[in-house]
Figure 1 (cartoon, one colour):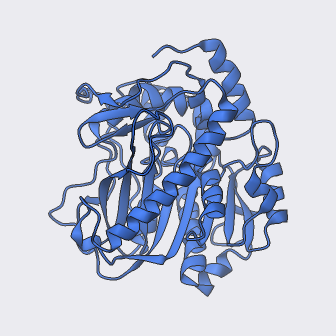
Figure 2 (figure 1 turned 60 degrees about the horizontal axis):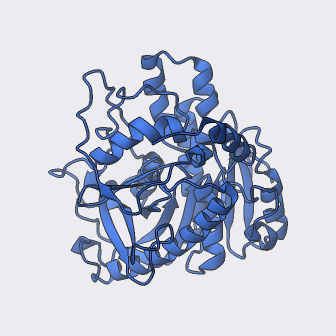
Length: 422
């Protein structure tokens, strides 16, 4: 695709200034995409010098299984390409597994998606500064078993929404850890807004690029709200054993009376918007996502707040999320907190925190590049602290754990990197 460098620079400046996320550089490519997902060429095999990557292992008591599901909404055309009569999504369901032995490791990315991530997303969207062909994204160790049998019991459900320009896999560390603690976690790719979505037939749908970033973001949030409602509807079918293609043993494993949602960057914004629209979502968490529009005006959810628990977790030294977050807190009658992960950057809440330290030294990138991407905090400390607070929030709000609630009451000597702002 062709990149208009002037448009790229202007749009990057605008979006970064308003902290929709570092990944919002995705909105700087002006070429239009085909109206339909076209079959992708076979992905090249990883080069001999491609680095094998490993995510941190989940810390909870459960082993983790995962299944990818192709969901088709026949009630509406695709909002980005209305000539397509159905909206199609790919989601991944992470869940506590009874056993993982004998089951293959779940792929981090499928081959075509990984090739696009390597050649386009990693640098054009996520600004990681990596030469192509130096990471085996598809082969990244996930510590998750594909299609493993589900553990007995019924588990709270949490939906994860990625940032703009991020695939649904880009927070697998945090998602798998939450599943290992006894949750069913569902990650959603929002087709034509996600950077790349590979479907079961091998076709690849890539991002539709905007000419008007403000209109794009407003529409994208509305689409995510509709997609989330549709996904929750399909989870009800899955739980009844009525969803085609879903493993039969997942039926009855979802406690849909206890649903939460969280996300990174624009995914965190989407979590707030989805909660405002859908009362099935009982609790939400926003990791460094703005609640103001590109013109600086407050989004509706910041103006009106929420009547259910919502946690705001931001990067260190942030000022861009401040106006929207402060207004949201002032207008929210229910439980809310605002936290800062000291020494972090915008991408610290994603798998970049685990993967970039493995990659950057091998490609000769300076420590400043790493600091710009994921901050100065020790990566293991950032990951474990984020995992602890995300789990504590959902343990408190969905399970009613008083002990988890105490971690959210104020600073903790066990997790000194997490600062309480409000």
